Amino acid sequence: MARIYVTDTMGEAQVRVAIVDTRGNADLWVCRVSSWGLAVGDERWFITPDRQSATKRVFFTSQGMAQVKICFVPTLGEAGWRDPAHARRGLFL
Image (cartoon, rainbow, N blue to C red; front, side, top):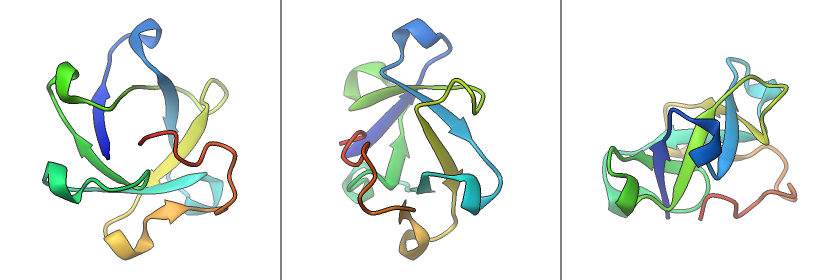
């Protein structure tokens, strides 16, 4: 389950993420979902304001500092890893 808490400090984060506009530059295409139950796998994120209920804490940073580059997509069908064998697959579970 990808319940994501966005932190304001890099030191508190478990993963550094860059948001890119172009899908071709992203490692992971992410669809934001409206409930915990829909947050399945790495690609469906429920962004929570509650740090304690999150499964991962992320810090949004530049592409050069990022561990993973993401692009937000509008539908669940588009979401997923650009390369299914990506080394970081399972990172947000």
